[in-house]
Image 1 (tube, one colour):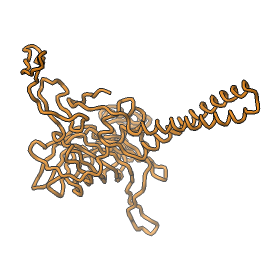
Image 2 (cartoon, helix red, strand yellow):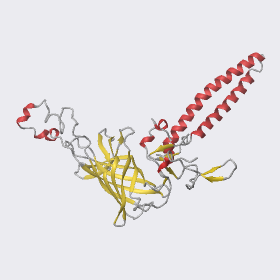
Image 3 (tube, helix red, strand yellow):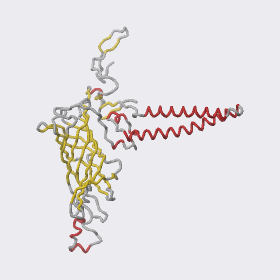
Image 4 (cartoon, one colour):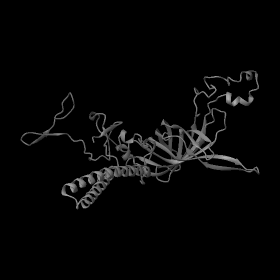
Length: 389
């Protein structure tokens, strides 16, 4: 397929990974079972007349082909699903997929895998930004303080089951990358940096929270991006609900009733017990995270690893005490400028090309035109279009 242009970068589109082996398996299984069915039909019809044997063979082959096709197709689809669920895709594999190949598969909710690269990236100078940051939580917990019958309090980490569909991953995050005191620093600025999510504890309680990394400032323990580096920092957790939200009784922050309309007598006082329910507030809480770098690809500028974050849950606009949510998962990011090759602007919107394209990059040399006699002479450029002939 022809290459596509993504944000000014020419990307070579490749077929979906693993499709060719599965199609070959499908063809082999179909051919083998069809031949076996044909041999069985011919053997069973040997005692019949030539016309009857031929008809039986054709019927047996048709039935075998039909059954084999449906069985092999189901097996191929099952193998496809199992492969996609078991293996994470790399960034180049993601870029080779089209919209129709990603739609409905859940791949848009997964972060690309950097791989087992062990390079080093020095931040600073022209490498002072990061983009394409993706954070995908895989494990969810609720940290609660439990008091037993003896009055002894202890902290328990309760696993939670995710109730949100495939919309809980943060992606497209970008910001500043630099150093402070000889240590690397990543500062989040923009992107899809929040995702309303809900988990359910074993007791059936559902805990909503706003998964986010807004205003994250992560400081590392080394001066270079390399495997083993840990970046830790804090971020802001806005309210799960916004100001225009109304609860079931029509109460809100910037609009709606001041109290439950079914209790008008409480206007004269006595509503202290319902003060938090009536007085809606926009709580801005906090969270902290630790990003561990496990892979760095110095050739492409990609890096990633695992993370662990703790943040506050929803407070139902001030009426409930927040719980502590513990998240564990994977993340990846990219330093722009390392893998980009800039050509003159006259080449159009796709003036940049990645290093991993199939064709090698040749230096821009003056084009040469061949005369009819076979001798080369310098090409001339037209003033109107700038093209060579």
